[in-house]
Image (cartoon, rainbow, N blue to C red; front, side):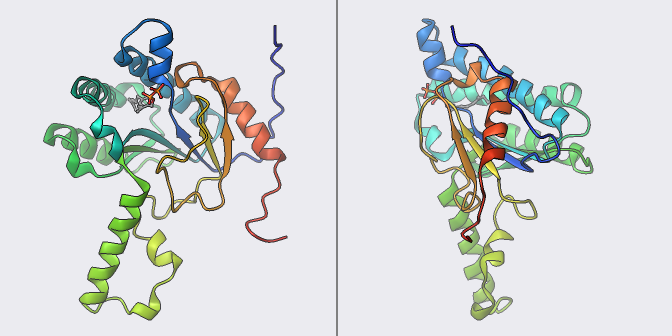
Length: 242
Ligand code: FPP
């Protein structure tokens, strides 16, 4: 039996922004002979626990990958099950979510149903003035699409004369992506054994530290999060310097 050693975390030196790819719901369900939707339901419950824990320990920004632009190609019943979970979450968040947390949905929201778009806009508005943790939920999100969208905007501004081509800098792009005004993620966590970025926060992850684990998302707990943070704190971030 492997004994769990409590990770030593320096609570004064937490990553400001954590990104999580919530992967492995399907395998979690399959191992139990359950439908994939049951894995997503457990994944959604776990998402709520991890959001609460991140808020409690003082993380400033948490970005979770809930549904990618590529996930639309999954079987219709699976997409519907995921949209239902998201819709329920957006309704229950008024009562269940810590009242300091500000919610922001990042992604191609026009792809969502009109009802879901309204729920998204309502919750964002309701939590807009909160000053605690920012929770970005990536929904119909793709990193390449996000960059493309910024480039489209820049091209339009250049064309209408409001932006000079020689004035385009990295900030020009950072200011036009969904996470504008937020720090880039310090730490990106991917459970489930895959070691890919899968189109998540491509622009923002330039200097992020990565942490992978074989644990499946529904089983990922606060102790795994602390282990990831402890590991992150041991690393020497040089941002390209020496
Ligand atoms: C990847 O696991 C997971 C997803 C595509 C969905 C993630 C969604 C949730 C955790 C629920 C979100 C709900 C709310 C309320 C935010 P997978 O299905 O690809 O798993 P597999 O690789 O084992 O098949």
